[in-house]
Amino acid sequence: MRWIRHLCDFSSAKRHFPPATLDAIQHAIAASEHRHRGEIVFAVEGSLPLAEAFGRQSARDRAHEVFARLRVWNTERNTGVLVYVLLAEHAIEIVADRGVAAKVAEDEWRGVCALMQARFAQGDYKGGAIAGVEAITAILVRHFPADGTPNRDELPDRPVVL
Image (cartoon, rainbow, N blue to C red; front, side, top):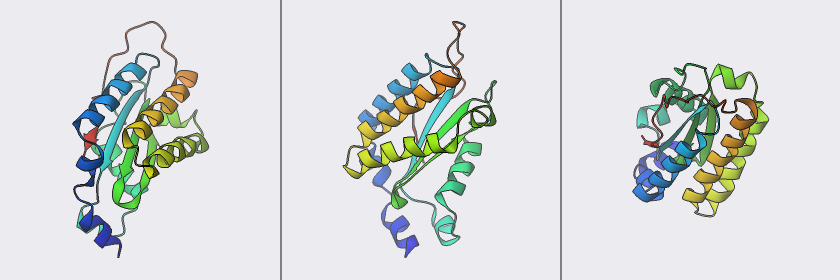
């Protein structure tokens, strides 16, 4: 039955994350990255490709795959953070590069995911995404605050719709 959800949800990313919502998320990420030394990437996918859905790929495994594909691991300070949303499974995963993972407990990321999930469940995808970016910002500011030197924008701020 899992594959049916993925087959039927292929256009939900564009429906729940229209251009105006993507713009708002992009602006939130850009503003965030002025406050810390991290890089945030937001990726949303309506459904898995059917081969992966049939193959039992988990949302977490897919998030790791997207983390690698979008090169979130390839930042100078190893401070990339991926927010991955898989709408067909109502899943939100956060994958952090090793520099961040060494300082931030998984429980903190689960809290961010729960915050976003609650807003998404109410149909507030824009508000949920921005609340998630703000929560991640607070974590990154605590561990990787801006130090007054220019923070080169290494990864695109525009959310990726897969």
